[in-house]
Figure 1: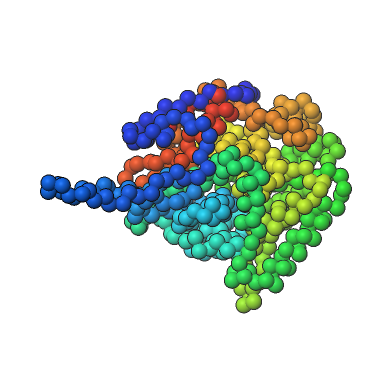
Figure 2: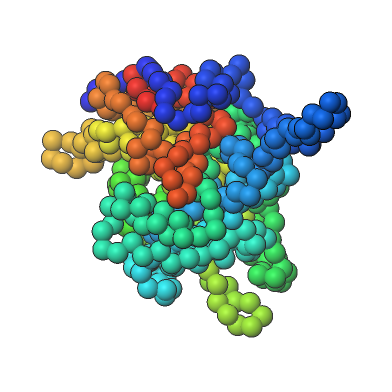
Amino acid sequence: MMKITGFFIFFSIFNVIDANDTEYGKLPTAPKTEFETEAPLAPKVLTIIDQLPIVQQPIAPAPIQHLSLPDLAAGSKCVISMVPMNSSGDSYHILAYVILSLSHEKIVPDILLTYDGAAEIRDIESKMNSYTQAQRTMHFAQVLGYGKYFKTEFVDTENCQRENNRQSKLQEYLDTTEYTHYVDQKALTTITAEHFRTFGKDNTTQRLRDGFDKYCPQYFSQTAYQKLVKKAQDEVQRIGANPNPLVVMHVRYSSKANEKQNMEDGVIGKLSNYVKSKGYNVWFIFTDGRKSGSFKSLGADRTDPFPLITKDETGDEQDNGKFFHLQILLKLRTLPNLRGIIGNTSGTLDIAGFLGHNVYNLHNMQQAFDYQSCRILIQSSFLAVERFNFKLLENALRDHQGKLGDFTDDIAQAHLPLLIGWMTGIPQAVGAMATASQSTINSRHAGYRELFFVKKLRGNLFDPLQSLQSIIAYLQGIEPTIKIEV
C-alpha cells in the first residue's frame, strides 16, 4: 500500500466568478462569520438646475440572508434538495444546517425531499425504498419541530440509476418549479464544517445540541416523549455501568447506500479486542435498519436503537428510532468515563460529532479520490478521519490459513496510525490515505460541484459558496498532492 501523508492543492479560479467580483479572487485572511451586505441605495433625486433631468441611482438587489450561501437577487427563491436516496443519514446534515441558520437568525430555504418508485412504506432494511427514507426524514424533522421547512416530491428518474442521470432528472423537475436556485444537501456538509472552523467546536456544538434537544408535541405527545427519554436514560446508565474508561463502537450497515463503508463483523471484533487490550471497556451501538440479531458474535454489550416503533394517542405507529438514537447520543455526554466513539462512515456517526462527541471516523478509501472522500476530509473539522483500505487491513489480519488473527501494534500503526493518539488524546493530523500520488479534481464535475456551488436553475451558472476560499485553504493544508481545479 502506498501511504501519502501530504498533498499539494493547486487552485486556478476561472469561468466561475464575475470579472468585477474581487471577493473570491484572493484568499481572505480569515473566514467570514456573517454576511457582509450593503443596504439598497434609495432613489436619489438631484436638484433641478437649468432643466437637468431627474437622475436616479440604481437600486441594488436586496440580499437574501441564507447562512453561508451567496447573496441572491431580490425575487430569487432558493431550495435545498437532493436526488432520491435510499438512505436517511443525510437528514442529520440538513437538520444541522436548519439549526445553525435559525441560531444566526437567517432565513431557511425550502427543503425538498425527493423519492422515486412506489409511494409505499417498506420497513425491512434490505427492501427499503427512497419513499420510505423520505418519510423517515420528514417524520424526524416533524418530531424535532422543524417539519415546516420540509416538503416531499416524486421525481421520475426512470430506469437509469447513474449519478449524472439522476442529478439531471432532479434538475429537470426543479426547472419546472418556482425556485430560481438549487443547493444540494452535500453543500450543507461543507457549510456546517466551515461553521466549526469559524466559530469553534464549543460554540458550534452548543448551538447544535440546543437545536437537536427538542421535540414537537404535535407529532410526539408528552407522554410518549417522556417514556422514550426515560428509556434512553436507562440505556445510557447500562452503557456506563462499568467504571473503566469507555469507548463506544458505533457500527452502521446498509445494503443499499454507501455500502462500501460497511465493515465485516470479524474485523470489528478484532478491533474491539485491541481497544480492550489497551484498558478500555467497549460498548457497541448498531445503527442498522436490520433486526437486533445482527453481529451476534460481538456479544451482549450492545444497543440497537433501530427500529423503535411507538404508538400515538390515535394508535398510529411510527418508527422513532432516529429520535431514540439522538437521545442516547445526547445523554452519553453525561458519562464521565466516556473517551470517545469509533465508527464507520455514516450520517448516524456524523451526528455524534455535531453534538460534541470525540469521534474517530473509519473511512474506507478506494483507489480513486472521489467526492465522497473529499466530503469526509471537509468533515475532519469536527471529527478525526482515519483513511484506510478495508481489504488491505483485512488481509493483514489473516494468517497463512486465511483465518483472522488479532490486531498487533504494528498492524494498528500501519493501517490505523491515528488510533492510539486518538484514544490517548494526543492530537495528530488527518490519517494517511491509500491512493495514487497525484489526483486532479475538477470541482465543477458532478458530485464535487454539489459540495461547493449553488446552481442557478434554467441556466448553467454556478455561484460559489461564501466559504469557498477558506474551504480551499483548509483542504490545502490536508492534501498537498491533490490538484483541485475550481
